[in-house]
View 1: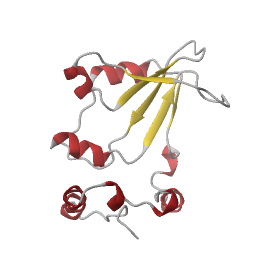
View 2 (view 1 turned 30 degrees about the vertical axis):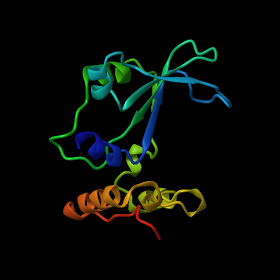
View 3 (view 1 turned 90 degrees about the vertical axis):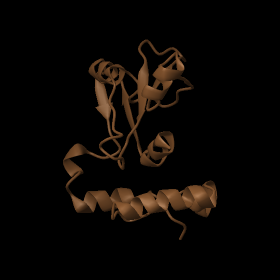
View 4 (view 1 turned 180 degrees about the vertical axis):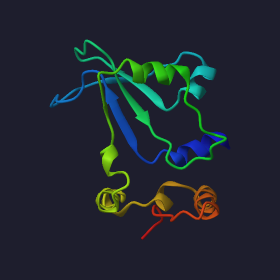
Length: 146
């Protein structure tokens, strides 16, 4: 159940890196920065990107925008990865987080291609669980089918 709560909490991605910015094309090998099942569970949001001549790794971090505070975690491995970075890039400028106009411009990209909706990707039971979670939080359920 906790894993599923994390899945629907992963709405956007943050790309933070040490050397990836500005490269036009990059075939990368993405590997999870964990070896044991326990480490994978703790570190499932942080992915290490290596290969194709990169001198230093980059990281891809799935954010948790909608999660109960009791379920939130930020491991020591994650802290070390952030601390080792030369640059951090977010899906929106931090200064724009309180700017409604900027937030709405991001919202136009919330829909998937070809009319695919969250309802198309989940079973009816999973969809109801996600929708109920949003309803309990009094949060608009923007990912439902049109």
